[in-house]
Image (cartoon, rainbow, N blue to C red):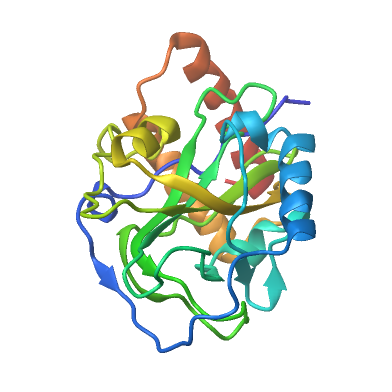
Length: 263
């Protein structure tokens, strides 16, 4: 059996270029920060799952980040199916101690460190979403979105095309004053490999919170939105600049997927 299948790789370049969506809500800014026990649990989980250092060099949570697909919350390594993550997640976070919530802005990002497969993640990181200029919200609540914010990279459904699960990672960064979004440094119409740390360094961003979950492609997920996303990902493979061995691995994966889907 093949080692892995490919990861859902790309959408049109037009969704990466310029800010295209703004969202606003009304909320009060409390409570403040995150409890020491929850912060410790996040640090321990990120280290145990090797999200540190595979995604970020370290994490010291200052806010409580909430992410959910429908009513199912992303916690610290819980499992989702591809069918559960075809739609954009809801997210929000608490205020940060010693920072004025009326003037401090944040950036939210989703990445996959395990593309195209965790055994050989040569497309690390795969970029799934960026929203910036976000204000903190009140107590995390499934019905609440964050206040304000501009979408810089639209959400790409996760659809990990590997049996082994991927560690999809959700991060919140504090922006500096007068923040300007750094260039993505990606080839046209692709989202990988995305250099997260270069982006963070160039933007002078400070990591203040995070969550992650696990998702792999089950053999029963072969129809509907997931199948459509798979076919779009395959069509985008021609835009990737790969070594001959990497191309051969992806071609083999595509053949296996097409057999699975009956194409």
